[in-house]
Length: 70
Image 1 (cartoon, rainbow, N blue to C red):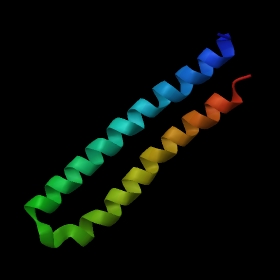
Image 2 (image 1 turned 90 degrees about the vertical axis):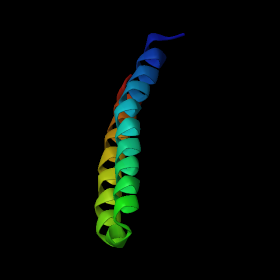
Image 3 (image 1 turned 120 degrees about the vertical axis):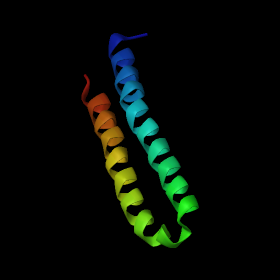
């Protein structure tokens, strides 16, 4: 296996761990909050989706870095 291929695989693999954990925690805490106060669903949903989008952007940055490795 080529070193560039290994570097790309590590960049996207390690770069996806943090956002994956973050999105899992965001979803878990949002569901916990909705379970405790179902009337607050509309107030919780939008910030939860924004936080997921920001976490997903970090994974996309890792993908861009992986593609830029020559």
